[in-house]
Length: 120
Image (tube, rainbow, N blue to C red; front, side, top):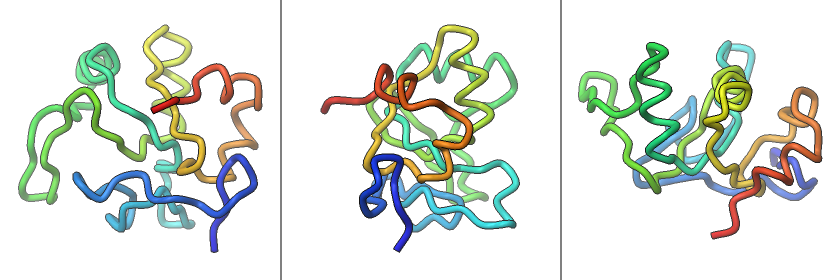
């Protein structure tokens, strides 16, 4: 069983919409996941608009990729690099720590993770 950044078992991020590189609801990763879809984030309007302005449109549905389009409040496995980019720009969405893959701890320090923890 994969671990989360808190050291426990990795929880599901979202089953509706179904997220993850493998579309299994979890932020699992593998060598094939070059984008590292490992950060379970709770979408905010600011993050979605910012991402779209940067060429990462998570708002528009793409049925050909089984992608429903996201809205504020949805949880989604975000690429690690995209989350860090949004953090640096001031638009980082909250992180659901229990569903964020342990490998994220190698790139984002615990203090930053805790400061952006989702408490829902």
